[in-house]
Image 1 (tube, helix red, strand yellow):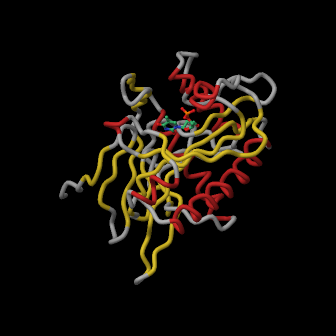
Image 2 (cartoon, rainbow, N blue to C red):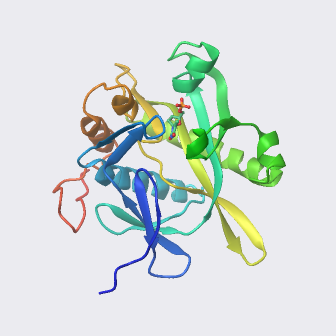
Length: 253
Ligand code: TMP
């Protein structure tokens, strides 16, 4: 059998050519990185958990009409996605002060924000993903004003949905990052949610105890990342069993 073609390798995922034009296979690695890959580790099972959690969230987003790249899960570590032109902007939505916002503005972590705050970061590892404004995005042609409006609308809909989803399982959605991609339909393009939505890209705190259930566990050396992500999967009702079973995880309800 011919070896399939790798299209892109990132820090936590690999993209392979998909079975049909306009599709890709997204493979979730066990690698965890932080601080622009200055901190790196391989965490057994992280990729399996993120594949399953991202599938769960993207499928639910499709169900409420939020367009995204997810087509279907293929196996424990891989999912079929629509190929998109990634907009080189990370969109962060914050509900509660934490992380770089707390550091930059001196607001204590855990302080609720008066309204969701959206920030943009330019995706460039060499520059350490600097924060940028809409002015930069338009001036440097990374996206148009219409694209930005679409990205903001998508991000706020994802925020509303995810906040409710996580509140329902006793988790506070502090903040998260999404990426957006462009798909073409003839001469017209649309912006859809791409990449992944998982505990790698969200801050998730237990409502009662404040315990962190996201990548900050790794960034800040707070304990077992696998335990934290497994807990998120368990609460969402999607705990994968039978690790290593190529047929994929069994649903647990
Ligand atoms: P920050 O507080 O470090 O700016 O992070 C804001 C949110 O974005 C948080 O949920 C983690 C997520 N994030 C990523 O997904 N990738 C990144 O490279 C960074 C820095 C943050």
